[in-house]
Length: 290
Ligand SMILES: [Zn+2]
Image (cartoon, rainbow, N blue to C red; front, side, top):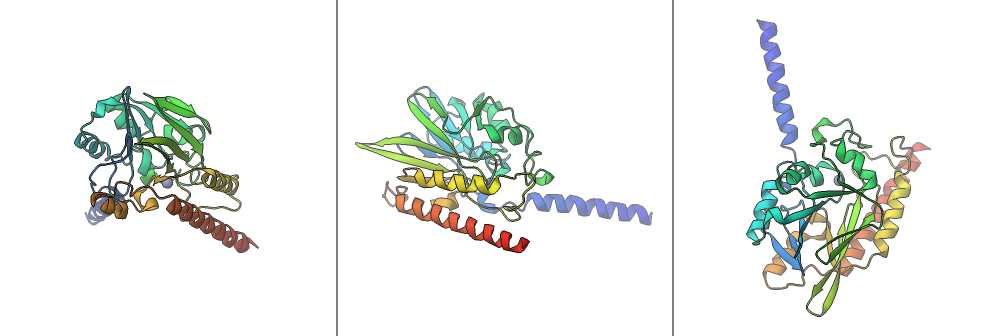
């Protein structure tokens, strides 16, 4: 009896811990945020920090990022609040194959029938549900529903729909296929260059030196920074609202400044800061080995 009680105790503890791990996602990842117009046919439809973007065209719409497994309903609500139809989404894109940007993809494909386009070197991780991730492959809590990819993208490929063209730039390192999306938006007489940064961040525990599961990781980050520095950016966006100060800019936008998201200087500063952080971490790991 005692042993059985202990058994139940351990069982309940493990249930509690697994719930606890799930509940450990930052609250701003699921906190709803009002959808808003950014520029041209581009809209924000994500949560307070997990960014998702809707690009509307006469031939149907494009969605960038499906976010958490629980996010599709929230994204659908944002799309409908803007007056668009969720079922008009024809193409689904992502920033990279981590659960906080792609776990909702299986559900969104089911809801809309959208064509799922993913950078070549993230296809395997997306189709395995995160099990082949170079760093998180053994972290079951970070797995997500495996999702079939309809089109593998290569660096520089374009995705077009109804007159809008998005370009996929491979800015790898954070994952093998991290993708920075660019597109041009017309605002009156102006053409605005939009950049949606995929992620230039080194996560805690990432091995930049002597990484046996991703030997090219440091080279990929460095190549990614060269790409990011070469892009023309007027409208600075990213996979997380935190990259580009989304909330602060939204307050200005709400107060009537509809150019609040035009921030070429902020983009340059952010990329320079991330590159310095990467190089400092690389040097720290290198000196720790000697
Ligand atoms: Zn990530």
